[in-house]
Length: 215
Ligand SMILES: O=C([O-])CC(=O)C(=O)O
Ligand SMILES: [Mg+2]
Image (cartoon, rainbow, N blue to C red):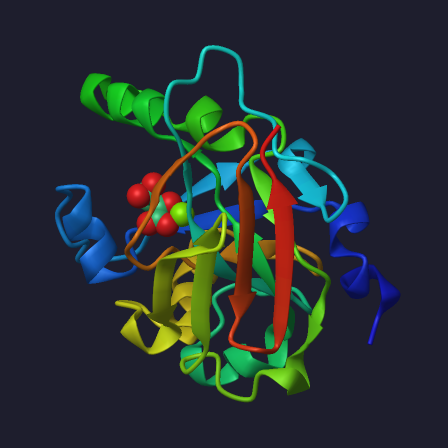
């Protein structure tokens, strides 16, 4: 295993995020169920690791937590078929897709991109790298998130509309993926606002967990 993958944050390649990959989450925000995957990007500067705090961005009125399974790409993928995707997965991690919900809604209404709503500084808190053999089936992993000890999100990756293999294959037909690129695979339902002083704890079943404070 390349040490670049274990240090995927420092390696710092493209962060691709999948939107509305769980029906219940698309519905809870009043959005249609996608008929094919859709993706957006976060800048690499939005990564933070445990020990750093999530900072509420300037002028933000509603910052939401979204807990997600992250995949680290292990080798170059260009038009890779679904059956060959497992060979290209380098490992996994737990991620928060922190979202400025009001800015996202306003951008969406105006037909503008979500870049600032999803890519502000500290918008991508992540866990340590999880070796691939710890997750033999990425379509059966529990995802949970608590704010100040109260359970807010509880889902399982089997509820994804487009499974990991499909997502990576679909992306690789349009965007070449390289070693160290990561994919955030979308959030289950239960997203909601956080305030200064809150503590988020979340996990991938009991495989890995992480804790972040909101500054
Ligand atoms: O902001 C959204 O609802 C889209 C998204 O990132 C997700 O579904 O994980
Ligand atoms: Mg998300």
